[in-house]
Image (cartoon, rainbow, N blue to C red; front, side, top):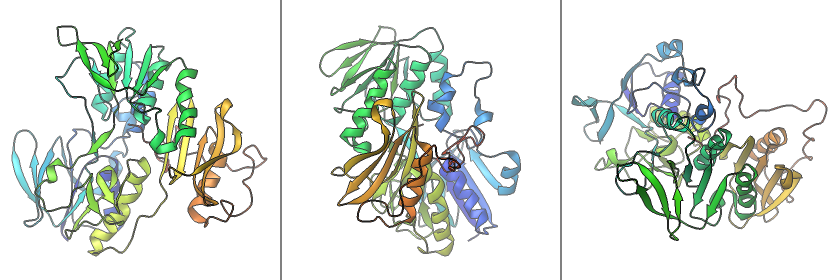
Length: 430
């Protein structure tokens, strides 16, 4: 294999490139990215990036995921600001469009890491309506948030919506969150814990409207947002809307490629598709029936996919437990494992009323997941045990976790300012 093309120059694409070189691939490495920017860290975009006022605000250079020395070591051929528009799996070519020219790039292997794109509302574009996925999105939103005191409506109470609302509240802006479901985050957390997390909005003066969708956006006659019309007929005056209604995998360019596409690129647990020498990783990959939009998956899946790509068959599988974290209103939310809709929830430490607690999900006497709000040390201990120990008849095996404040208790942070989110702690945000 003389040429490998990584399509997607964000987190999963960068980790795939790193893995290729780590596995000993010394051929031509091509990295294609639709954005004009080198790989950068997305988690801060919905958090500290929005709240910092220039000067001194986080800028693109502060978010870079690799420095010049690492880029030199990768010895990659970068095609940024360039979209992959087609994949010919028979002729082994990727069609590239940089806005000026269209050409076909011959390649022996392909890593698909194109990620996902935000879902948008129907209707004509209006000034004052924003999505939050890329650096350019966040830069435009930050500029608007710091222009006076805009009335903000966040459509969607998921992780991106909650983190954006938290940032707006920190700026002292009037914020309303609209969520079509009875509670935000029910699919991820279940009703009991979702209700506790929903209370975080009220704790910080953010209005949360659940159980109603959005019928449309009203303009002021000049193409600028004026109000949000809810499905129940209410009108919410708004100067700025943040649409956080989820994402869809970026697979349109793969139509007609011969790959199986179904809410992502269909592949096995090792990232292998049905087409030889084509693998997928990150938000775009539907591995063994599941597509995971978490930071951890985007950093861990590429190594497995690349190993299989170079081997020409599935020799490794990605079987790590899902894990994410989210920062909202000064609280850190963490979840590890695979909770099910019928799982029982048990608080084992702290008090939800204090917004600091540790909980486990249990099914048939077995622990399936661990959730915490502002309990990082005991959470990380249980997460490690959940990943390495077979569940016992009464939950996680082994002795009870050491109290978080015990003398000498090891601190296992899921991220730190110094590491810039590089310490295996994912976030679903941005």
